[in-house]
Image 1 (cartoon, rainbow, N blue to C red):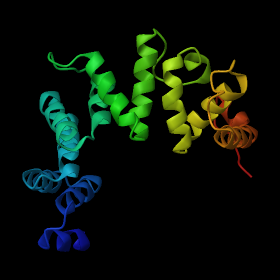
Image 2 (image 1 turned 90 degrees about the vertical axis):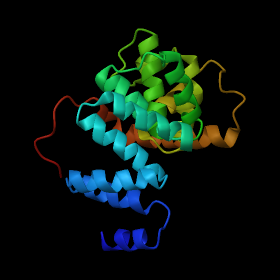
Image 3 (image 1 turned 90 degrees about the horizontal axis):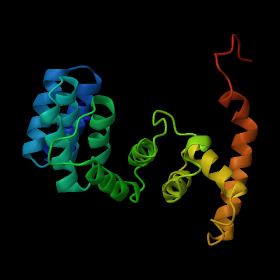
Length: 212
């Protein structure tokens, strides 16, 4: 906290947002709001998103959306906040459609934002009439539009997307023939490693009584 306070004194970029996030994580909500509000006035990107979180936690979805959307427009980030409002609260303003949300998530996903990729995949599943709560190989394998984003998520190191994408690669009917051989080999190797280590855990329905 002292470091962030000192950074604020020196007007370092992002200092107010960092101070606000620290207060928020420490459950100091009033301090978090004051710092985030000051950061908002200083045009600090972290503060926009945090103000969205604060208003969302208070149930003021209109204000939460406004701050998340300002973050998207000003800084090209925060799309996952918009998606969270939709999936957690079934909230979209009248002037913003599902197609707009999908477009914004696609743009964010191409910037390697893992949260946006996950929400985008859930949105694709929802549009296809599938269960969107959990992303699995079985419910997403037929959605060819998802492959590009699974690949990005796999390259960024997300274990679940790496598992799904690796299985798609090994069971595909030529869809990935244009990918570089080194990339395919790397993903297949990592898939086999994860499958060996985690396949049993994936099938567990209850926690083990002991771990050795």
